[in-house]
Image (cartoon, rainbow, N blue to C red; front, side, top):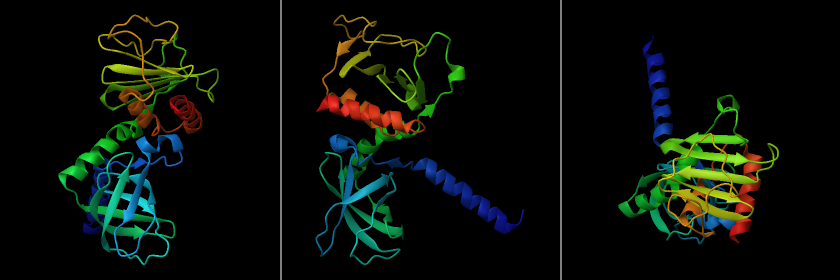
Length: 256
């Protein structure tokens, strides 16, 4: 292999490594009722007052944001930005423009203090898990299951979706950290604790025990952390986006 080919291969491997090291998540700014959880905006800090710009995707290393019309920008330009992530307090980050076109500007974070790092980490944590969820092929389902879709991801995170057909979801279960959020009939329930989940089982609000126990089914407040974390995971699911979008709308309407 020639030196140039080796260098090209090394560069490709480094780029692949960087993509894995800094996974990006898509921002769902169109989910109006969920902006406090998954919405993200950015403000240029300069002499001219600008309206907040939409962030399209974000990682630990940078973001792709709406092009600020009317401002002169160039590659390599350094600037400070104010990040508006969900309902967190805004924070400032030094950044550099690394690419842009008529619609989008790609920025790279230059200096991130511990406060900004913790806020970015909190905002991204569950979304990154959702972005790494893999749709499991039905050939691996047991014969007795009745869910339509099964997503499996990091830290033994699972999403099960049921419906009368593949385009309509009427029940969802998101399980992680030894517990599960179940959404069905406009209501939220939690099951967790000592309960051993059989991932090939059929879980329904009608069939699960309803005693007031940590390891059995209990009613969840619509704004509980378990519900909110489940929403963040669901916003990043790929491959069956249309029915999942309808499910998210149903969940957000139930929260309203």
